[in-house]
Image 1: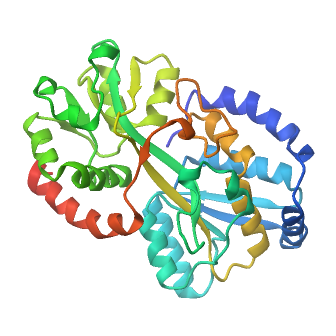
Image 2: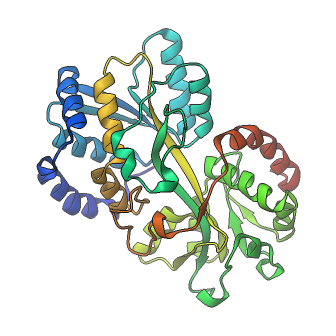
Length: 347
């Protein structure tokens, strides 16, 4: 992603405030023990499939300010690229990534099955919203970010009272030639959406959407661009992207579906064979802690904790009805859905 115009003042003003004072926060005995050991290692490398490079770098800066003597090398790529790079490192016997975060939970299921993850449950996970705790019952990977998919509409074209109230409303004939969304063949979040919608409504849901003549982009975020232009007026998109756009003055609003907002959990894990195991575990603690969620909120991403309020216009996960397919369901159903998508939409 290119550097966003809105990010600079937020990161500059609020971010510097965090950098100025996080060390005053009391550390638990476990955290202090990890920190003392991590200082001897001196650094942690983070392969990130989430956020953008600027935000990832900022997270690293705040971490290093809280834990002086430990530098963060944040390497942001798409999740698929990060995963392939990680596999190459593992095959070569030279693990470079201490912590790996991906938008595709299937990556973690695979790595766990191959014995490439370290079993570690962050102490700070107890402070996460309940729905985000225990993503892996065996404790090999944990929530590092959550993307929300919901209904988004153009406020210049659609009144709040007339906006879709639930996922099934998107198939209403009144949205003929007015709807937009991305493709599971390019977007991981859209892929999870197809799994979730098929579980609820059957594949006929997408047949009905196709009958409405939708405009289909690649990324889940493409819908926001189309909605801003007024070319289409309602769609499915990322909540965070829509809120960022609305904060810049664009005519967008989010409708959280009555039956549940789709949560796409992006897990983090410590990679087996890392030369910085304590720094990696400390970084996992940081991701589950309040400072990290504050950075997410500054950038209109979703707070992972109930004690960190959401961005303006957003909702706390604790106050939201959420649902998500399991990792096993995504791994089993996503690939066939991509084929069915091409058969249905012709692309």
